[in-house]
Image (cartoon, rainbow, N blue to C red; front, side, top):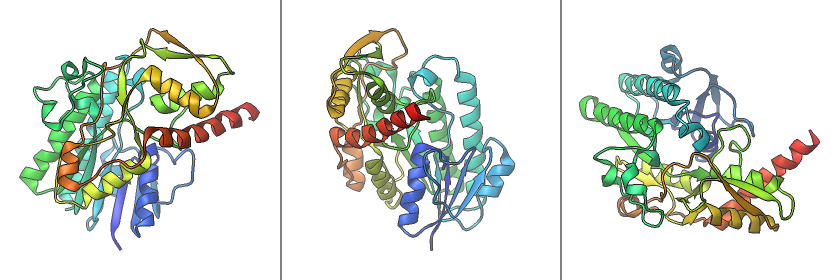
Length: 323
């Protein structure tokens, strides 16, 4: 039986990854500051602990592990990342976690280490045209991420690859592009755009108003969680180290995204565009490299994924009304 540790297992992607690994027959240890919020963990062992503390990392990562999945980070949506108010803690907290984790993985001779980087590493200058963003993997240098969150992710990519070169650590580095789906943050201030807009539409009355930051012409692509997990597992089982994009190429403007979600909800809403942090003007995954290297491409289109996500968020909104 293979043994894996998922760091950040109380979070959205991490909790789903634990389920996926268990379904494949793994023994799994989860580690996080908190339990998964929306379903019971399926991990065989779960450590509640702060990965900023070396003792917690030393306890979590042991000799003989086949795989470690490092998803833990100080993160959130645009309101958390792009205001600048949380820059110091984002850099400090995530930096500390990765410094501890990579050292311990090398020391304990872990089989493989997967590190979840982000599309936020890409230069802001390449994402000013909402219709033609440039996010192929090689475009990351000269570096100019649009946030300190992106800078920390880029530093940590280099950290893991440095340990690969100097200490033989077998690493896989992927840049996630807006992963969404059920059982993620939807109302705590750290939710991403899909869950936030699903919530706003669910809470709106027929013909009601939905507030969107910026002019709504900024574009993004969104990848459903099941596709993300397929990509991660295919990538880890390959001989390619990355870095590689894991995302969708189905790009959509945010105002159009609202209309899609409203259509799924079978209600009409009115968009009100207001001042607020928006990040880059355009971003979409470039999947040429991942298709070439490991043969992966998404299977779930945006409408199908949003239908499943909206149903879950709407259920949470209805529960909150009766609580």
